[in-house]
Image (cartoon, rainbow over all chains, first blue to last red; front, side, top):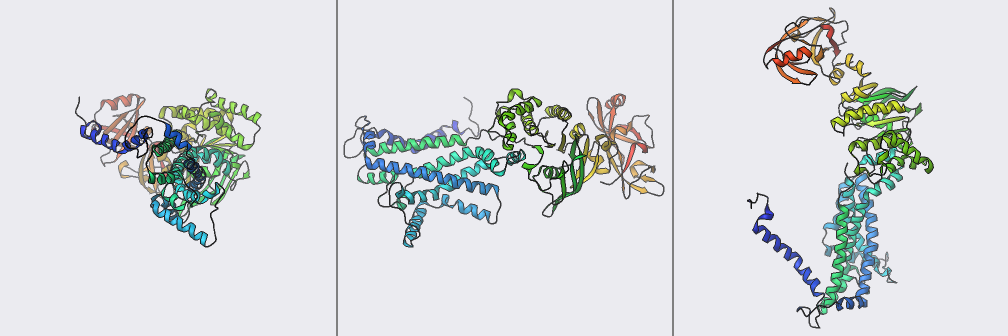
Length: 280
Length: 353
């Protein structure tokens, strides 16, 4: 075996150990969580392996309040994603296409929700909704479902649309403006250029931005916790309240489903971001 | 009648003057080239014909109609872009059909016209391909077909060959000329490559700093350049900034010995120009200018050699040697002495560029 080169880190034993250690540190808890979702434990905690079972999956699916929380989460995620992508796309096109006074300031402000700590966003939104209510400008509808989720959806759009805008804007960055000019030259109106040339180019960005917004919304706890009313529960909030009593494999099972869902969506998002047809 | 009339057109971007009072008439069925170094305003001028820029002053007429303020989608001209700008999400066929579709041409008519355009550029077999399955040359043909299918009065080409490799470029030059002759539509091509312009164009406008220096056929540009800039830009040449004695009709330069008589002297300062192929080399070389130089680099080019001559004053001249002379020079070593000579008749006295 030849001597490792200066940048051949992967072949140094010490480096391999650190690499392996990091992986264990990152993924062991998740793997344990998934394994113990199949644990046939009785009451009194989910710590000792007592045999394989899938009954906690059945139980999780049979738990009405858990399923309601799950449905709430999915609804909030879908609705907020649609709005986040729409707003994100408009923002991205605005920032890409036009020059206007204070543009850098605007760009910074738009991306602020990405860097502001979630807890601050949560508190700010809570105060915002409370004051809107107090001054009689806006009262969150209490029902029927899904109108009772309005406040959470608005909050989720607020923090997820900058992410969508970022992703879509990155995609627009490698749009060749000559494409739009070529379409104009061939007789297309501004609207036709947008519809026939720009939107097809933006699609991978729209999908990736959408999936990002979706996963962000789906597993958000902090902001949801602050903005949800007494009667509305989302999946992460529900899991939190269940853990306060005892950690049963049912929670593991529900979490596993969420992990798989998030993982699948993230995977698709990464695939969609791969540059394929943008050469030129 | 001219198909495109550019009348006293200027374009300002803030303080910068991109195009300054340009007037050009482009004839029906002509292959016209706009030639100049980068930043000379040639692309801006083309974009004012296509409608992507609006002139700050002056007017643009296409087919006799004032098009100065007409948007690009309403002009009877089409353009081939430097990057080709082929739509990546559409097949070749759909790319070519796009212009007809947005124009509202009947679906039954689109098919035959697309097929006709594709066969014109020999892409029949590639109709169903996506652009990423095509080579650069093929993509350019798509861009050509897409523009020509609209039956434009004028086809505009923005540096169409610059993205191709050298060999393909030469082949495409010939094809462009043939294509233009076949369909008889006027072509206006922007290029910074003088060889390219010389090879394809019927007439060339040489631009510098937003102004037209000369409009002429390739041969006239080479033989009778309007000034030293054109002489420098078209082909290779040696330049001497001469002192003019207008009364005697002569010009002198310390490197060239005695005063030389010229029938035409420009107003103001003169630059004397001699082309490399006009310089005679070898022991028997005689002429009104006769110099002894030392041999510098010799670049063998196959059919001829480019020879660098170092004068005693320290300046270098470029000469070209053919046939017997090339062999003679090839046998000599760097630093050897060599005679070179030419006549005043081989030179041009031009205004400083």
